[in-house]
Length: 330
Image 1 (cartoon, helix red, strand yellow):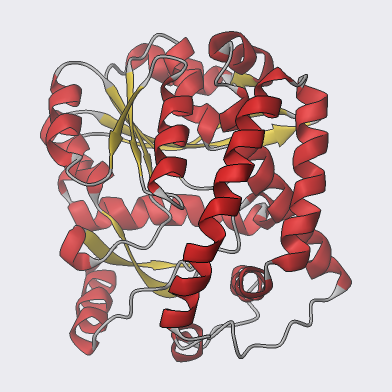
Image 2 (cartoon, rainbow, N blue to C red):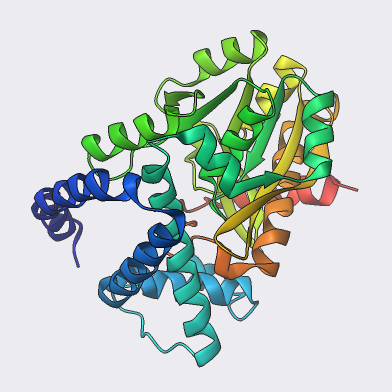
């Protein structure tokens, strides 16, 4: 499918997206948690059935996670429009769970438009290590990825007494982005658009507010991305956590929300990085990527597998610089 055809298709889908948003706002906030997740699970099956490109991308990413695809050139040249879809029974099960997790997270964002604090407290729990970290580090730079219920992480930190600021990227149409930003603000945390986020985030950190950042998305080097190795593949990711930690003298914590039985989540700390160490921007960014990689390899079904994580293509000089930095790292 050409880019022009995809743009036309996306434009035609806008009315249906708004119908879905309207129905979601009318129905989801009033459901009990069990019914919410039952609805999300059913929708995830429909999405998986019709998301032709997405599920092929998800299968490719899953095979990268599990070590089946190690050829960097082949990964970077992957085209989901031309790829076969031939998952094994185990892969099919993981993909189904990944789509389910993604739909549950989006559904949770809509659900917490109403009684956000009570619903977050009933759905998530902060681990003891996470509670100690937040008590001892004010402000902090919290780092995670699109794994588990990423929407609940900043909410749980907010409930622990940390004023939080997070970044929202555009999702779908402008209307969809605005509605999700409104949902994310419902508990009291501050949300800033990704475009032009640097100044308000830096000022917020200086004012004692903690930052919540997701860093497993591809970010062009022209927009502050740094080439690191993720799942064995060169990937340009945001260096924002290291930069803000170094400038704001704040400790970094890498965490994620582990799904529990009954549709609940527990925020678990993976790693902490002192502000003094964050001055090495590349090494800190690579360390955060490795921390997230460990979670993804252990829990691939909790990750949003259908995202194009390797959309930016490194130039030969980018690869040379990355190799030199890796060689210089103890």
